[in-house]
Length: 155
Image (cartoon, rainbow, N blue to C red):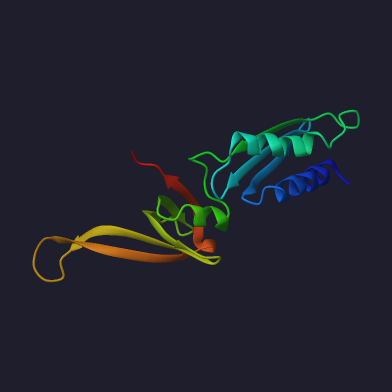
């Protein structure tokens, strides 16, 4: 079993004890520098990070292989990677870049296992007469058409 496989197995075991927390990213760099990024259905606490760090650290032998570990929560500006992250961000504004290069800033109104639904208002020319009118738009977008999606925080 390789070092990375050991770390992955220990992470999975530690995450089973915290069902609301899930793995976003695992990187093992040169010199066995382990970087773990977590997210959670209701956020990630410092204690969650400590518990996952200990689940890995306490079950690896430093005599066998030297390593360092860093466990962090996904930041606000971190792009969404998993369907589960979209579901927890329903009601928030997303900046979505599609695989076609289109950029959409809209409210995330719905998320399933296959797609997300975005809603926004746009100013368009009136069908009859001069001027513009506000039009409500909705788009269902499959996950495979999303290049990147980031939550926009407005104060």
